[in-house]
Structure formats: structure tokens, C-alpha cells
Image (cartoon, rainbow, N blue to C red):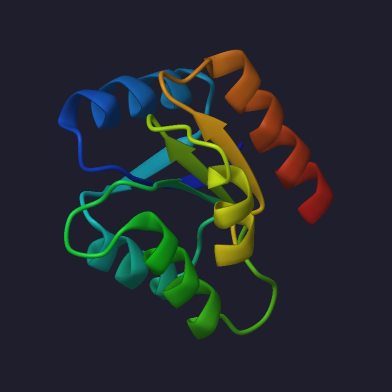
Length: 123
């Protein structure tokens, strides 16, 4: 399965989503804010990043831009996650460098489908 970086500041969301992904066989590492997410993503080794858009210090859009700017080689797929789905947020996430976009609360089957599609495309 995949090694996933979950960048999420809400402890309940981190716990719930990481446990559900781990039960599906994924290895999940976590970051609690934008700067930590950027540092961990830059260290590499992830198959995919799940990026909350509402993060402290730097938001998910800026964290994604920084990850993309620092990448060399094959870019890691990034899925934007947001509870504040507003018109234009999907386009904003894609412009920042995300490969896909999903809303919270997370529908696990829908998210797993997006993860599988991106991981299959990357291979």
C-alpha cells in the first residue's frame, strides 16, 4: 500500500483519518501545521500527501506551493482537504499544485478512490 503524509491541524480529524487509512493497509505519517508538512514532504519518501487547506502558520495552499517549488524529480500527488468548500476552492487548490480536491467530513470510500486513481496514475 501507500506511504501517506497527512497534514492536518485538528487532532480528531488526524486520529480518525489516520486510523481508517491504516486499517486499509496504508502507512500514515502526520504533520500538524503547514511548515511541518513542507519539511516532511521535502524529506521525501511519500507516495501521496493529504493536505488540509485551513492550517495554522501557513495555509494548505501556500504549503502546497512551497512543496511544489522544492520538488525535484517526480512530483508527489497532493489531495486538498477542506471543510469550507466554497465556489472556486477546487480551482484554487489545483492552481496551487494539488492534483485533486475533497471535502470534509471525509467520505472514506470517495477519498480512497481518489487516492487509488492518483497512485495508479503515478505508476
